[in-house]
Image (cartoon, rainbow over all chains, first blue to last red; front, side, top):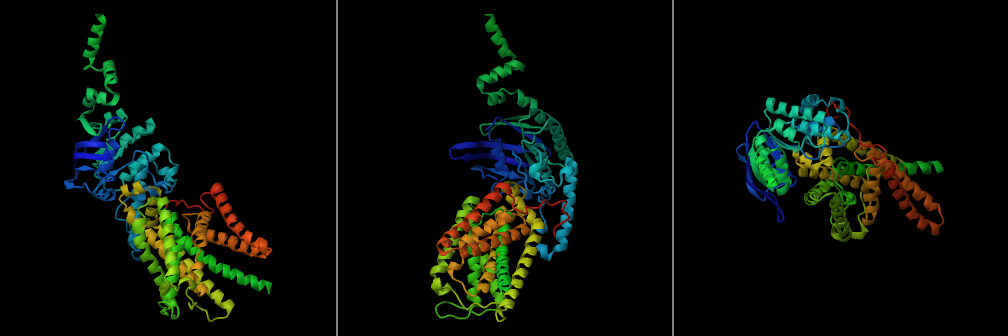
Length: 277
Length: 315
């Protein structure tokens, strides 16, 4: 569905994404993990068209979409959410959802005068869809609140809700769990799974909450220093020494690994033997 | 006698309030809905004023025109020319972030002012343009004033309904979304740059109309008549005080500020001459103080932006 070929994004001399290649298949929930500064969000910005890659090629549904801007990609079915919620704070929650669908004749300056019937019909459809989405997210009771007044977790749900207002094919979720309490988090996980199974959304999920990654994601990709370090299932990625090293630094990784991993049992064994001697 | 004088003054004030209400509504489209910091309102006001003046005035020796067009055509042309000039300016300037846009538009307005002042062949330079017809200008003074007031009120009403309907429509929702969060609006498939340009042109056209109404009311125009202190900064204060994002607030703000502004002029004119000159600066101070107080205690203005409850479609 989505293919990244050797993507590089440099800011001056600093390569935030440095030769990243990745393939996402239809129906997957791909978990993207990695330490802070690994280039995950920058990669998202590049995929979503908010940043142009310095070099490399992005193929989406068999089409080269490298030069396309964010708004053009949206119409192709590639929708993103933001790490820090980007709600329209002075619009109501319902309006936040209603502004999303494409092909709204009422967005044309003149249609409001010349094609009133069509504007009204489409507006009713959009409203119904928004109400259904709010019901799905269990946010109906705050429909008329200003989005800026929602809690952090509710804003995350609203971000997810916006992706449901269009025929999305691939959804990029940037840390949907950050700042969300446990109860709401379980709800969020459930919603993502339903969207994946029932609506056939493909997801790429950046997340630091490993429980969520374990529960939802296959495959899991770990990035470090702008590159893909390893790709595989959750347990494989988790126990890979290179991943620990990327997260914790070299020596700390060894220590961390020593405390619970079988692979590193030997290391501990060696240490014990040294102590014996 | 005193009473008639007061009534005349009220009509005069009403006409100007109407004209400034148009400017304030226009700025509301740009700033209130879309978040464009246009600090060059006076420029588009002047373009509208001069366009209609050149097209409808009687021929003159020292400059191009006038063409003696019908007045209504002059008004339409004022809107069209203001919109056409706004297009390339918007194309260039709207790429800037809000604070830079403000500086750029101040500059643009200043360029217009200098062109108007120095291009004698087109605008009559500092002598300006005279012989501009006024609708119902042949009637006796009071009737003529009343008729013009009616015309201005109709214009404000029409523009209000037009803008209000656009605001309540999906178009307005999209613009407010762009204002609140540009990146998210783009991520939701909206063409942010083109839409901002649309709002800039729409607002500028209405500023042009206000300029045309102003020039036909005065029957003449000189570069001094368009003072950025009033036609830009006072308009901003009107909108912020009235409530940006709310069309009724924009109109209310125009009325409140203009009444304070002109009544304070009446009062300072009655002071002895040596104090009167200094008192003029007190007026600017009072307006500045009011703005400070509103921003401190009611930053959303007298009539804040409405929260739409369960919208059942536009209009």
